[in-house]
Image 1 (cartoon, rainbow, N blue to C red):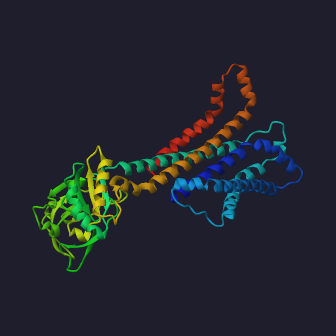
Image 2: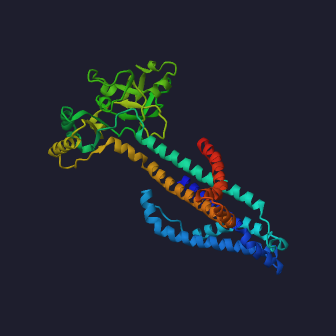
Image 3: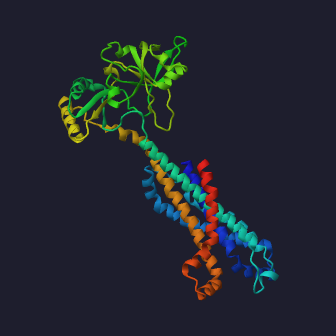
Length: 456
């Protein structure tokens, strides 16, 4: 949730910039007040203190409003996050403290800016404006919209990344693959059901494994090459049968897969991935075929190399991996069924009926492999939704500030607008006149923010 905290601080900065912009933009309306107070004996320090108290009170009021919104919006936020989100304790002083602090900090510059006016100047009928204040406002507008645009680009990146995680080719078939959990006392069900399923018309292929492929795997001990006896390296592994490759359409790079034509494969052979082969023999990975590997169960030999696939979530790089064959009564945990498309529900109903004929002690359960793997990325999907929501809020607040500045500009130029209307200027031209300078600032912010966000 660090990225959400960062967006939260960005929203506070944008809101503070809005406050500073509007406070300095409306300085002309308070200049006479400052002049009168100074003329009646008020010091600059007293004026600064007054303005800081005002901005702090505004921040405290905003904090009170935020506290109410937090309590009202928390159920919806928890639904969006998909989990229980505890509120910090004690909530009241934290929220009011942040509101007051933001109000105080955002009021510092306006306080010093307003308090420097000289009575002899501001009490004149036509006191000149401050070009320094205008320059700062331009910088602040560019800054806040640069932040908002960086958040937009970041949101697009997070959402695209999540879409990639859901649609990426993992290197094996996920569609129409059903997982059926097999608990330890159910091996008699496996021995009766699996051979039948391999001959069913609705089942393209059937196999078993000790875990779900594509998510975090257990590691097993292996010793190879020049390693000392009793020295083990732990490598992610999957215990499978000879039909597992065809069920998931894993692609062979070199050598062969386990085969019934080689009876020793059930305990004497392993298949590794390309990354492991390249680690064993960087110059020629094919030399790994035939190499001996020792396990706690005895010596085994590498008989094949499969093309690399994502056996871990896509957020992790591909590392060495081993497929092994062992006694199914010891290792079977999941049946893998690749179903024929067209009548998936009917096939599953038939499998369930046959299951219940074999055992009623354990209910029939199944999961689709693609959905199982997509669940790994629910957190990223939730994050993408939250980032989009709060980035949109940041952009909305920035636009509110821009709208307020545009309204103030129109109010300041009321006479000019009236003259232009009398001379025949249309609403579009007048709107462009008012918004032109602000749109230029937004364009400058875009030029700064988009490359920065893209490269960052």
